[in-house]
Length: 440
Image 1: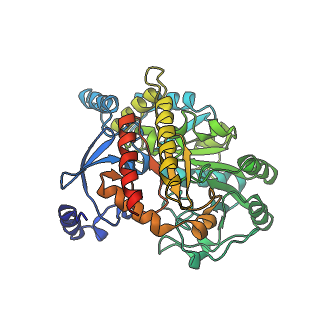
Image 2: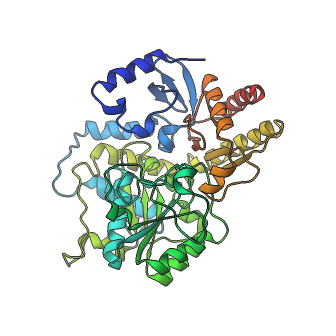
Image 3: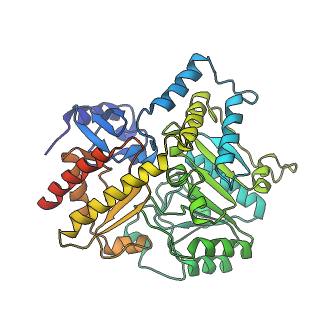
């Protein structure tokens, strides 16, 4: 069993100056592995061990690590001496905004932030200003950022949220201290794929918005049941609430127009991040013009603030332009490539686990995948909590890491194929998976 002593020493050094030793505590894992570099589909740790990477920066590096076209665009911005002015508009942000809105049919206009959390924060502010209401609905097991409205019920324990209720809602299981109780009272947590609970909450509270990942990808790949997203759209329309899709993960990874292009449901607002700039720090909020224009509303009482010195930083924006252009390129056929690899991986995993003689399900959407060790595909987080074999999942992930296949060593976390992966990468992954599964 590897021990990664250099990684452990790095963490200890960091802990002297950084609480927890990691600037985003979501990155802390067991085992703790520090990575020194990445190229294409591969990463290398401080010990020099090489891995085929399916973590992909929590799904951000969709084109692969250090994509040459994205790097060239960033170098070009540096060579052109493009600087952060923080005064007036820039040509890069305008170019990217046009490219983005032309790529996402449901985006009439957009604004740029530095993170996806900021984008969901702004989306909820707009919804509250538009509706004059304060209450929101979020999904059990979803992740929509770090701020007070959404820092709850991410991967809760059953003892903290209780058994399944429908129709009904669940306790606010906070990820953080410092959230006022009065604020928690405005947030209503329900299970995904449960329209009855949406109606339950809407009848009891003045709901400004429903915010959700259209595919619940924080707990693997939990897909919407037939009619679910359409039902949310209808309920929001009937209630005068806004429907907000958090496409920070699903966004450009599943289609150039976002998952909304695939499902055919138009949200009022959407948020994007991660793959939009292939791992460079950018978030986007986009949607219907009538709502986006609340950023410049003529009435001060309704105007929503957006600000940020580093919003649309020239290097990040250059990276985003190059990323979206490559994703839409007929020459590269990014989505065809990752779908082919996804099919290859799914078939191989089905073959391997089918011979193991234990319950399993492979859930996949394009390049994103998750293996569930249960006898049916989950429909919500309670389904996962009560049926998935977490201990086997952990052992499986640790075994793969030992074999040089890296996905985040936390059960039910999504795996991500990148455009840089090859058929040979998938074949090697399956070969090593066969070895590990046979030993479990």
